[in-house]
Length: 237
Image (cartoon, rainbow, N blue to C red; front, side, top):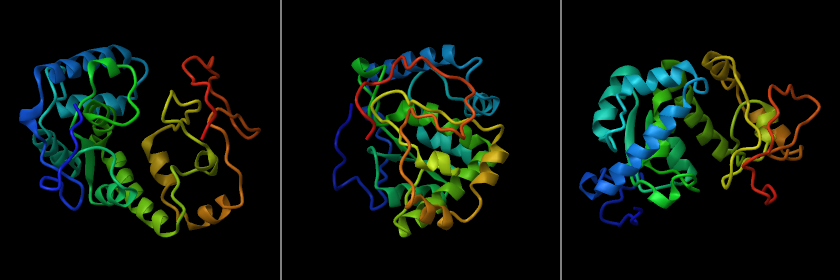
């Protein structure tokens, strides 16, 4: 279900009230199916902080959760809250919410035929995929700083995605599995790497070419080389 937001219920910051009464039995069943499938994949793949956040939130397979309840748990743990949005929001709005420790969550859920892939985020993607790490104080602080950094980047006309120059130059895909993933040892490392002023990075980036989503460069340390299974054949954009 993906109804368009109307002028009457869409606030200036692109938030809406979670329309709880619009979820159908099929919607909750879709959540349960996705939840149970992902739960089987997590062991050995997800970091301990993610698992702890998921458990701490109390997110379960019984159906789409109430955002207010999750927000109360989050706020007590790290000062974050969830705000419902109708879908993707403008960059300045998104970063502004993050800078204020508000995480935008798309309220609608995908259709059963879209179980394996959806081009834009839905409620399961946002709640299950992103929100658990906001229970971690270090990551929560990082995301707030990321929001503030994003607003600054917009002002410099230099919006980028991460900290290291290698990552900032790398293209990413929205239509298939990512061709390259980058590893960190812990979230302290992530926060420390993204703390410096990015303005010099932005100036340097303007003189460098992009790196393809699946390209390996000489300076890379490759931890694991995949088979390419699941990649789309279309070129990187």
